[in-house]
Amino acid sequence: MKKLGLLCLFVPFVFNTLNVQAFISKFVSGTYSQYFAYMNVGLVILGTLIFIKHKESFTPIIKLWIWFFVLYFIIGTIASFIHDTDSPYLKTSIPVFYFLGYAVLLSIDKYRPLFIKVCTAAFFCSVIFVIIFKRLNFSMDHDGIYEYALDRAGGVYGDANQSALVCILSFILIYYFFNPINGFLKVLKTLAILISLYALVITFSKTGFLVLIVVLGLIFHKLFNAKRILFTAILVPILFIGGINFALKSETLTPIQKDRVENIVDILTFNTGKVEMSNRDVLLQNMLKYVFDNPVLGNGVYFSTAIRGHNTIIGVWADAGIVCFILFLIILFNYFRKAMNGKTETEYFSLAVMITLTVFMLSLQTIINQPYLLCLLIYLAYHIEKSSRDSEGYDELAV
Image (tube, rainbow, N blue to C red; front, side, top):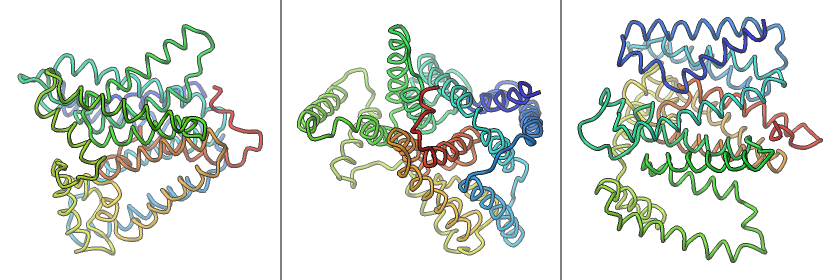
């Protein structure tokens, strides 16, 4: 039964990571797409029921998530009723089913290493599709092969920023959890890391590039010690400036791609007046108007997604008011606080993941609405809690 339970939970997770439902909706049938979504939720519920009797205690962060979802739907429903907002509860509740299923599964210590292997493999498969789709000039936004050359790779999500997020997470997971035992596997690990980074590059995501710089600093923090700081301070700028000049002089990049490279330079040099925001600032200002109109109760479940707010954090406030917004900030704060209290390797791994997700929350509206990302946050909640209590050191990286 436990093997069946694992299949019931892992298969929907992989399908969600690869955005299979969107493919069915676009290229088969919207009706079949809905059936597919219901089937996956049914599998998750079945898997949850199989493991519920084996559940161990929830961590404090998981308990905060439970309170968050309860308050979100209670307050959001009240706001929806008051403001007559159209709230698709069935669609909005799907991530909650995944949350409950994985909160139960990952409370059991022995299943966490298996989950992270499945998660790493699924993320890397998504990265592969970023490259394949770009090569085929295939776009989910344009329902297939696009007649003009794509400037940015959108992958299975049809969104360059979403794909960039998964590329960075794939890089982090492979770096920390793929532990080769021989030379051949070391080559495979290096190749997988390079593929993840290449896929990130062809998304031309400004957010992705900036987050990658921070992540690299965390992962390779040992290069910043007293003995190596001079070498690092000289080499990194040379590589960065050389890469930027090569990109700007390249004849293979389109004008739009070169503009995005220049935007990265403008951000790093604090010349923000020249940075093109892709209308994210306009969308945020529009959402803030609704926030300030109804700051206490918000505007209703799913509201921020419906108006395309493109900001997960402020979107919580727009949906369910100030209480849920503060609780969400408390959850994020606890992730960072506990991550910094963990063992050394856990600290840098956890911070790399949390910084990546948190920064992308400022430009994407779907971070906590996507089950595969929510599942990773659930894993991290157990992971950092275990590390902070484990006096024997960090052992999950040795899976």
